[in-house]
Amino acid sequence: MQHSYKNNQKLVNDLKINKKEVEDLIFKKTALKNVEITNSKLIGLEIIDSMLEICNFSNTKFKYLSLKQSKIKSSKTTGADFEEGVFENSKFENCKLDLTNFRLSNVKNTIFKNCDIKKSDWGRAKLKNVSFLNCDISNVDFSQAKFKNIDLRHSILQDVKIDLDNLTEITISPSQIIFIANILGINIKN
Image 1 (cartoon, one colour):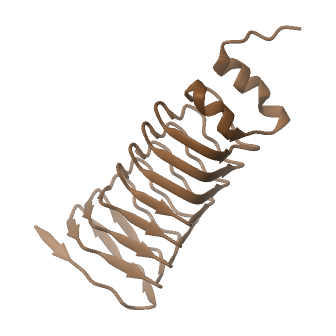
Image 2 (cartoon, helix red, strand yellow):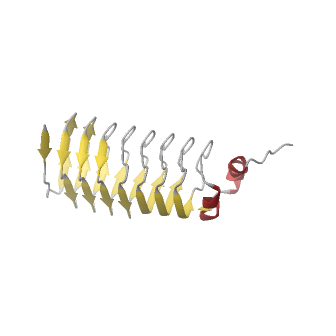
Image 3 (cartoon, helix red, strand yellow):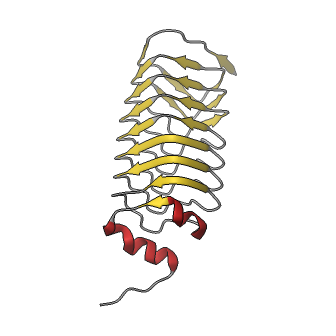
């Protein structure tokens, strides 16, 4: 069963969608709070100039997602599939994004701050001017991703897979040098 929604409201509160296929859901200049869309498939979701707070999009597949000029705060997308999504000029803060698929996504001018991004897949994604500040990105796979100006300061980098040619495009904290040495295969001993 398919559902279509158009939304021009300023506030969406306590919306719940579970095990549905939804097409053409558009939120523009909208505040979404306590929105729960789980175990569903969203086709053509657009979120523009909006604020999402305390939302749950776990185990949902997003096809043709476009997230622009938006802020996502204290939300959860564990196990979500954002493959080939577009993320621009947005900020994720205090979010749980573990086990999320960002493969082939285009992420530009976006900040992830204090987020749990463990075991996420960013393979072949394009990232430009992206910051992962104080995030847990352990066991994240950035294989074949394209980096341009990536900030990883103060993030947990344990067992991160990053292609060697992307190392010149990252900024790290001095305390993170040991993780980069591990990526390079350098053994450090006292």
